[in-house]
Amino acid sequence: MRKVAFITGASRGIGKACAVRLAREGYDIVVAAKTVEPHPKLEGTIYTAAEEVARYGVEVLPLPCNVRDIESVREAAQATLERFGRVDVIINNAGALWWRPMDETPMNRFDLVMEVNARGAYAVTEAFLPAMKAQKCGHVIMMSPPVDLSVVPGHIAYMISKFGMTMIAIGLAEEMKDYNIRATALWPRTVIESYATINFGLGDPTVWRKADILADATWEILRRPESSNGRALIDEDFLREVGYTDFEQYKCVPDGAPLPLDSELMRVARS
Image (cartoon, rainbow, N blue to C red; front, side, top):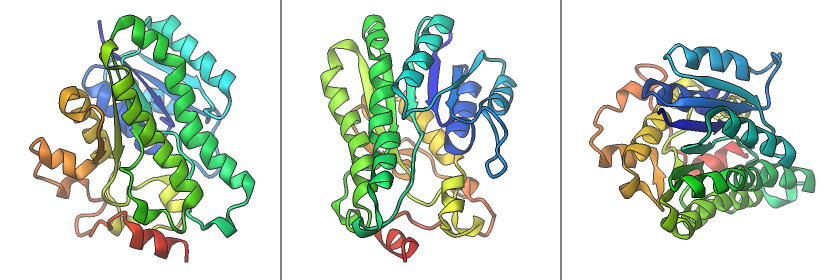
């Protein structure tokens, strides 16, 4: 029986890259995202992503899922379990970006990042937790950073939402250890090519890495649950830890210089 991965925000970008990577390793994939119709400004839908993933000979289920809507989340979880009878991996990749200080963050923006990031990841994980407990296995991956207080000033709302995801991963790893359920947070060292990156004006392809680096790190996390469980990891650091040495392959352009995703970049991005 093949393992099953449920991936939010999987119609494009990092989520789709993770879906393709796990499909290459024989996972059946649930492509869960909001985009069901072509969008004039966004590439891909759950159906076009599913077609790409299906080329690897696995079973793919495209599902509409708005992580801000609890009924949408529950319906997606139910449809997944009805189709496959299990879920082995949850990748909470859907995200909302807002790099602004508090006086430039109205409540509707605060609600957006909280509902998509922290609350959305909690809702998706909570919806599948009974099934994972019953099967006594599973791995939850949060696309969220290690807790670094130096990046909080200027990004209060965003970092509350992202650190909340990391806290879920760290807490879940301890709370669910008797059920063989693991949890890990994963974050990039550098700026990753994505529509959020493009829309927020974070440089150009010369300073980006491909989403493939996060997809590879995701696969290595799942291959090494004992060494990744309960940790908040940086993609490059973990890949080096497990033996990767070629990071040139992740550059978007051959002569690029990937830009570190750090507090200085975040300061410049909001100026």
